[in-house]
Image 1 (cartoon, helix red, strand yellow):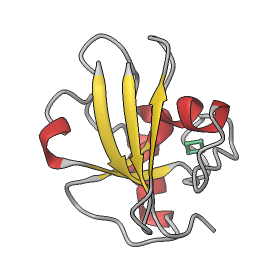
Image 2: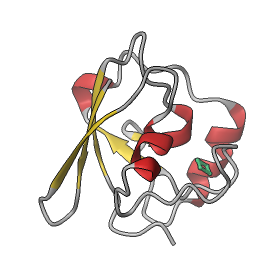
Image 3: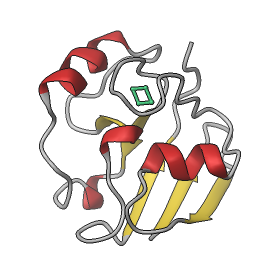
Image 4: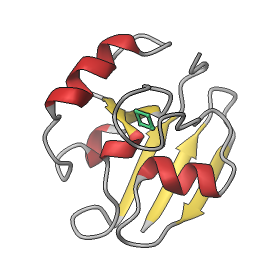
Length: 107
Ligand code: FES
């Protein structure tokens, strides 16, 4: 799967990730700045917050209960449509390609 991480300064990290991983893991493994993943993907820290680009929202799984709660605790304001936790976005299958904005801060 291909993931493009857009940074607030305009820089883009293009990451090639294996199927079965998540947006958060792909970012951490590739050293993408701004994605922390403190809780290791348990939907318990919100340091993997991303803003998904509109065209890619449709293929994503529904927001779960834990994710819903953590999205209220993000460092940067939640966007009602585009905010997701990167650890709750699986790659591969329906998500062969995705583009996300990285928030200015995760802490
Ligand atoms: Fe902690 Fe996603 S890595 S909520």
